[in-house]
Image 1: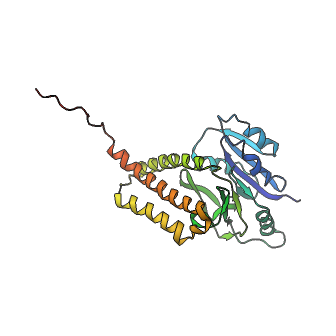
Image 2: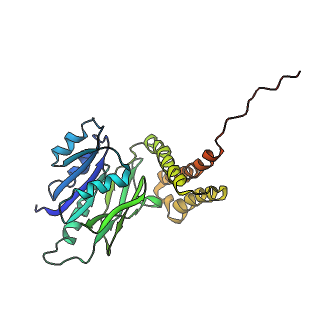
Image 3: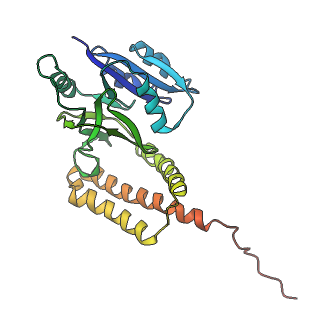
Length: 267
């Protein structure tokens, strides 16, 4: 198989259990793989990445946006493919990328491409609700984009036209419900820091409305009910995590020493 002029750009923490599957889906048909690894990782992730032909750079954690921009800056090929350690390029997506980047016969007018992301959760592929199609820009021409957004929700800002790929990027996030739940505090903490930095004002109505809306949108308007019980769980837990995220600022503003529970002694 001929290799495409693509640099795969990945950031990673301790991902020895998953990174091999991700890199195995691209090694052999891309020209370069770059992995920016957190400097403290020692679980074997680096050795697995190297075995798939990756160039590994250990760096201190700078946040999702900073880390991804660092990986992108090291790329040498004309096209870049952003990939997470819990993602896999499906055979269909690989074939579609080959067709779109066949610039020798038909140059593409696009600066980047977005693709749907299909998530595996609780033994099922989730094909409805807020989790699908979950379009993300993952393939872009070098020099036309940079990572931005609010950590940890990074977003690629592209200068130019964006095309659409039809095949799925497979997502193996949250192997268990416990893993999923544990991420709620991480995202809530990051969101609180952004709110404090931007001087956001807290609103009870906003917190209540947003959480309720997320359930209605995911379960009813986006047909999450078609995914069975996993679809209900995702909609309900998304609503709850939204409530937690938008309540952290309230908690921060109310922080003070609790009153004493002891009754005052009569004289």
